[in-house]
Image (cartoon, rainbow, N blue to C red; front, side, top):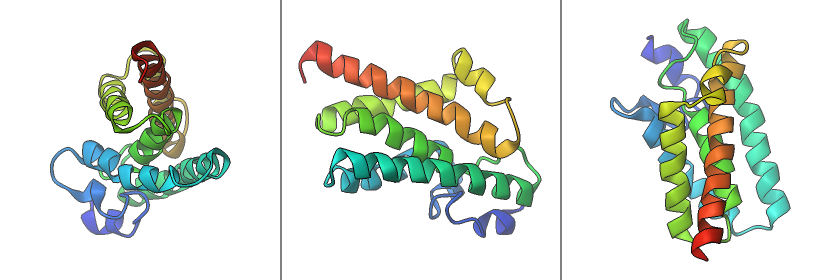
Amino acid sequence: MQPNAIRKHILAHWFGCGLVPRAPGTVGTLGAIPVHWLLTKVSIFPHALVVLSITLVGFVVAQLAAKAVGDEDPGAVVIDEVAGMLIAGWFVRDRGWPLLAVAFVLFRLLDITKPGIIDRAQRVGPPGVSIMLDDILAGLGAGMLSWLCGFALKL
C-alpha cells in the first residue's frame, strides 16, 4: 500500500484511526464512540441524519481511497467501521454504556467473521460499495441483537 496516498483521505482513515499498524478496524470502530456519544445529546432524527450522512459519505471516500492506493479493500480505510458502529449504536442510543459495549463487541464479531450475507455483500459492486456494505449489514445486525439483549435483560 502507498501510505502517502491513503493519508490524503482523512475521512476514509477516520482522522488517523486506520493508519495504526495493528487492528485498524477495531481502532476505527473505537473512533466512532466519541461521535456516538455526541449524537446521544441530540434527538433521534438528527442522530439518524448524521449517521446516514457519514454512511453516504463513506461510499464516496472509500471508493476514492481504494482507487488512490490501487487496492479494492485497503485496511487503512475504516470509515466503514465507523458507519457500522454508529448504526449499531443508534439501536441502543438511550440504553446506556453496557449495551453500547455489547453493540461494539457484536459489531466487531460480525465484521470479522462475516457470516452469510455479510460476506457476500463485500463482493457486490465497485470498491466503495463493497467496502461499506458489509459493515452496514454488520452494524444493522449488531444493533438489532444488542437491542434484543437489552430487551431480554431489561437493561
